[in-house]
Length: 163
Image (cartoon, rainbow, N blue to C red; front, top):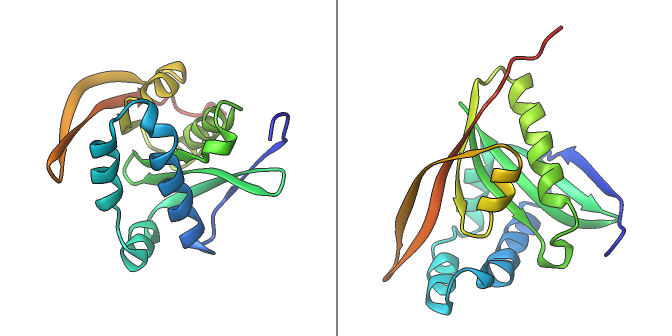
């Protein structure tokens, strides 16, 4: 996958199960570098079933990334300024997919007239969001089953589009 060209596009509701499977692979694979096995299992067990997943995506503004012909990642935005989901396929990690998705999310948020974006970034995603200019507001400890997962509430103040 190295050297692949990245193509970003708005998601139009097709194949939501492919996004859910990518999320599962990312949590089971890449997130394992920051969370232990019990935490990963708890995170995966808290994911919605396919019907719940479709419902979660129904009112989200989703941007997908393709590397060559492979689904490489996605970001989901939710009004009024939340980065709800950002995941990159483990086989496409560290190739600029996450940076490209955040950059496009910022453009989209400005186009929607939002003044800021907030997210709950995992230990793994925090450096990516910080590199994009997000600031940590607070560290959080989120219960998942018998475990607690650390993440960070982060924010980005959007400057208006100048004409």
